[in-house]
Image (cartoon, rainbow, N blue to C red; front, side, top):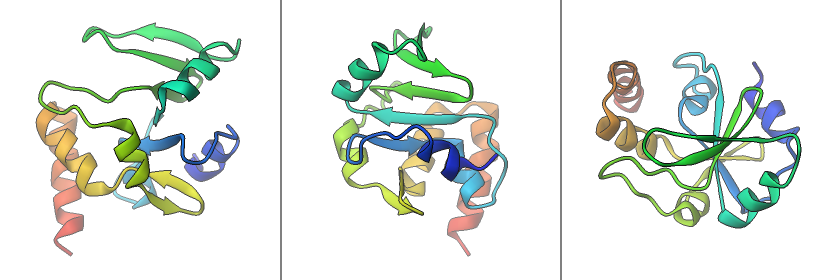
Length: 132
């Protein structure tokens, strides 16, 4: 899966989104990703929601997201004590081949709070990467 090309194919507005989660782990060649999670501003979310290509999904924690094939788009990235401001995440993204990604330290922070089994594996991968 070519994450960069797939995200570019969405033609999202710069400054309105950032890629979050395991996609960055694939970019850094730490492990493969099965999907591409994207955090967007409320304005972009509402615009995409009007399109027939995106389907809204309700999550157990009360969040909603938009789905299209391998993409999942969120207007918030809240989990228990982790409640980052999306505009902050976007502003502080790192750019790889023109695509904004939430920095790896932020991904690590989120994974430590969520702490699922798959997160614990990713935490080890990220910490090993950061310690090099």
